[in-house]
Image (tube, rainbow, N blue to C red; front, side, top):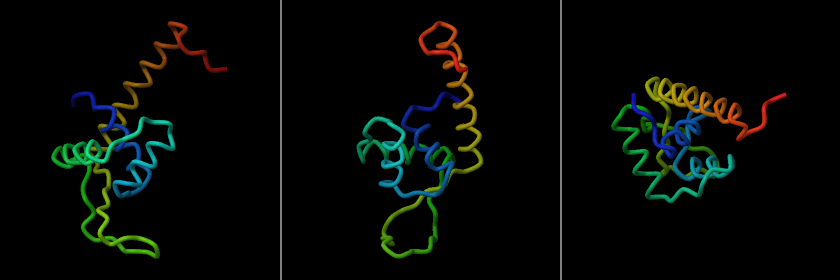
Length: 108
């Protein structure tokens, strides 16, 4: 598995918690302090992730109060979860190296 693009990892991270629609993914990324995600960028990344079997659109979803039935929800697949775990581990190694290089403080 090749390294995920940052936007792809952000999407998988959002979907690892729960199924979400596009705007909810954008909001979740923003809540973590991530960069502002343009709608087109998000949906191109979702298309790549869907084609790679990392995410899947939810075919049927109950519509609750205040929810729009036109929204397409997405869920992470086992392949996507595996890729997200691998990427998180890769990033953790880099953070550890940054601490060793004194770019980040060591944890107490």
